Image (cartoon, rainbow, N blue to C red):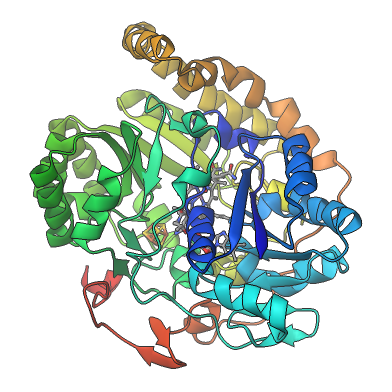
Length: 511
Ligand code: B12
Ligand code: SF4
């Protein structure tokens, strides 16, 4: 079957700092190709809608699948699906990915027939069953499927994440993927899932708090095959299990693979497993993203982060001592007043780290979607990108955005200060000499993208597609939030903790 897979456009606010390859879609593409299907991929982060139309004409796909990890991309995907159905009425159009898994039924209704099905959960086990069913019938029985008629059996989960390897070769313009100075940059996955349960996050609800590891040999082999000199490790929390990080490091040392790495982790994991991070600095670990979320104990408790402000500050010192550049994330509560923004600006200026701000956003799949008592002020999917306020702000909205952007600008200026500018200039000239311009563009885009008037104006755009309302029920059992209810499902049975991929999911409570 001819299958076209599409990743939606980049969201403006993230594009200035990074643009990364769509690893999930590449893995779905690989699973379909391994089963003998003809597969093409269009990544709208680096290609245009015109390119997509050209591919639709020349490839004439029998099925088109969209990757919807982000709620904010749903309107664009529905509109494109409508266009595809008009041009190719017999083409089977389906959606899959993280966020759409939580709102499948509503999205099908909103698409009014333009989308035939939504695949909930992991795409690799579902895609071949789905394509067979599109050809032979029985789509309603595919695990994880939701159609206008109802839903199929529970989604299946991969037993091992070693296979299939992402179909990186199908991506056009690979040199357009970057993160900060790591330009160009590829991505890799060493582990999947997260055992913690932060209230604002849906990573743990998607995978039912399970945690799987790639075998160190498979991870190292995949890494050796990557052409790019820089790699972003997409794991939600890197090196939770130090022996796993060590085993991959040993394989890479043996193969003499050296690249520059960017990863995300938690403060407590960095403090507990410092040696493994240190070992990775020798292999090229340069940047780390730490989700600190709040600078005070009250905020950390509210988000159920299970770390103390003290741990967060110790982790920053540890990272500095290892020579790792850190980007910190802080969650901006729409209830913040002018004084709170001032305190955060002061904090941001007092530390050498890059500070990112994201706005607290209840979205489907998170616990706060059910528990947040403030009413949503908008249900426009496009505003659910953690850069807009979707619950009432204590300050007038325009003042809130003014303070937010002012704080972001102060932080940005700090990083473009004289000393940093010299360091950046070195990286810049190195990249420009190699024809890599992504980092250079990023430096000059800030004022255009972060603009309070623009953010405010985003609230007045006509809204065609709206998120469903949060259900007015208490969450009895938190497992009701899960997409994958059991760790691994083989022949309908739940299998726990076998083979090298399984892990006795280090619970946050015992972490
Ligand atoms: C890596 C990552 C990124 C990368 C994205 C790289 C890319 N181009 O895809 C970067 C760093 C750029 C990024 C940015 C952002 N991210 Co992000 N990101 C992640 C993260 C940590 C891992 C995703 C990943 O690569 N996983 C590994 C691959 C193999 O899995 P996968 O992509 O989920 O794909 C699987 C399934 O989803 C499914 N699938 C995926 N596509 C398809 C398509 C079809 C047809 C089918 C059938 C199945 C299918 O099958 C795949 C294989 O099993 C997730 C958290 C998580 N654990 O999922 C957050 C996450 C997806 N991001 C999130 C957010 C909020 C953002 C930002 C909005 C943050 C910001 N404001 O800057 C931006 C927006 C990006 C944009 N659209 O421009 C939220 C989503 C929130 C929401 N509900 O909308 C998540 C869930 C994090 C969280 N804890 O809340 N992100
Ligand atoms: S540690 Fe918390 S924020 Fe990070 S991925 Fe896990 S649940 Fe989400």
